[in-house]
Length: 346
Ligand SMILES: Cc1cc2nc3c(=O)[nH]c(=O)nc-3n(C[C@H](O)[C@H](O)[C@H](O)COP(=O)(O)O)c2cc1C
Image (cartoon, rainbow, N blue to C red):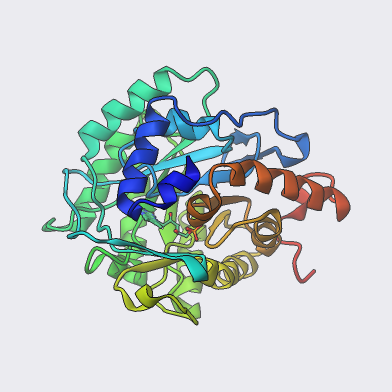
């Protein structure tokens, strides 16, 4: 199945994969996770720290299937208030030699109402529910991006286990400006206020770009700490083009996969050390093995997400990463996952 998908265009393959996952045609790789991989963070219990990153299941149609692959958590979205088509095709490029992807989808999604219907329908069928995050974004033609987040927080709090405020997609012009100090401080203060006024108060995280300067990373870390935000997801895709060989290297969009790996890890390290471990981090960017996941955890991530390695390695990668990570933790004498967080450089 994975080989077949790989022979199709990236977007056709993606749609077929979502269809298969939605219709129960995906393999069942669930197992009782090694207890060394268990942890509790943001008040949520995870049986393993490997999550599906945002952008794969934008309309919450594949949650059941993704849960069956053995993910410890699944982040659906990015969802915007209104349905939108995204950028013209082609808009996903596989850079096979580089183990990377460039995408400029531009938040193609069915909008929050359809998303919530799908989300409720698929989670109702689940016997054991993985931790489910909802990742929110803004419509491209919105007069005010800011208001979109406020609307979506209110809609997402009744269902989400956690919510991610995504202000780091490179494919919605102007969105990344929300990461500037004053803009992000105001946005996060207001989204937290709205969250705190709801009956359910799921943890709130912000997802940042790998292209920020050190000063910007430190400023966002300080703001997160001051406002008691639950955590930071580091990172989204990069607009930089480090050492690529594939002919699609100069396509516009966000680059993910192996060439992003070390940059994302560095950002994690900076957030962790700047806040002395106080700001919780979900690490994402180029994780394709247990060793890669361990590196992110040792740099300061409490949890790790993957996207691009699932495309290149197929669904078995989730189980492989979990097994390798458990073996690494044991070999290096860690009692549990928690005790490995932020240990690099100590
Ligand atoms: C095709 C594609 C679509 C994506 N869409 C989103 C999205 O809608 N929202 C988001 O927060 N991140 C999105 N991402 C970024 C991923 O969640 C992740 O941060 C990034 O790909 C780095 O991880 P990776 O190297 O394991 O792929 C997308 C990535 C890809 C490859």
